[in-house]
Length: 217
Ligand SMILES: C[S@@+](CC[C@H](N)C(=O)[O-])C[C@H]1O[C@@H](n2cnc3c(N)ncnc32)[C@H](O)[C@@H]1O
Image (tube, rainbow, N blue to C red; front, side):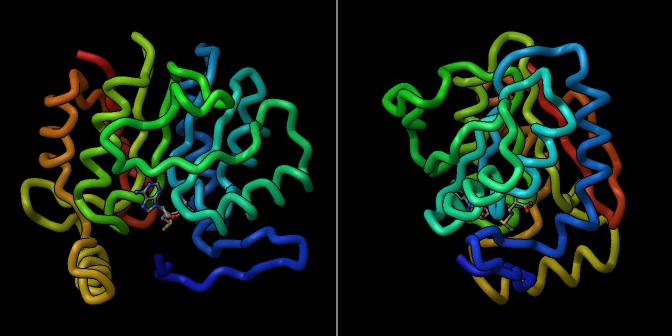
């Protein structure tokens, strides 16, 4: 797994991803708008450094956050951020491969079976399409009745990039790994449809990104 931008690693294991500092306040604001009246557990998949999980837990103290990632190195960073901040509503990091046909949440006793929200930031374009499929399959199974799936990143609309910079980013992603690439919103809507979900909102975010918010049909 490589990253599009280098991350700085602190001596205690905390990784610092440059993109976090550019996008976090806007993502936090969107989550506050959408999750203020909702209680329960929130799963973050592909938490990366863990900086977003820490920011979410601090900004939304009425929700319990469960950070996860495929990569064990990231789990160390997530837990290092938590050790630094000591938030009471942020659990220790758990390994979760979103592409697994069956998320091992029910075997992994530390994770709940149902979530009020599932959050995926900057994952579906930096992983094979099977990971995006797995995200929607898992969300269909593990979101509660009023649950929401938040998918943040750059997306194509009707086969077209929404900005020249996204087209260039897409080329660079595919050069790193031919299975990566900016996904089309309609493709994700098809995965949602197949798992009992529907697009509720496509919120425009800075830097030509979107947050796609899905709910149960
Ligand atoms: C570009 S990073 C984004 C990290 C973080 N969400 C952020 O926005 O800063 C992509 C992340 O996707 C994770 N990832 C890739 N494939 C995955 C999979 N199959 N299951 C879970 N996480 C995965 C990587 O380990 C990595 O942390």
